[in-house]
Length: 78
Image (cartoon, rainbow, N blue to C red; front, side, top):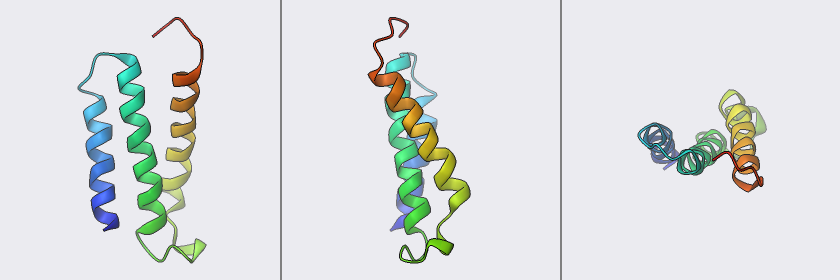
C-alpha cells in the first residue's frame, strides 16, 4: 500500500509542474510532499524509527511547511 502512496506523491509533484498558477502549484506540491512523508514512514515497519526513510521524510516535511507558510502568508505576490 505504501508504494501506491509513493506513486501518488510522484504524480502530485510532476502534476504541479504542469500548472501556471503559483498558488495551485504550491497546493499540489504540498500534497505531494505530505504523501512522500507518509511513504517514508509506512514503506517499512512504521513502528521502528530506524526503518523510516529519513532522507525522504526530512526534506519533504520541510518543503510541506514551506508551502503551507507561503499559502497562508498575506503576500500580494501570487
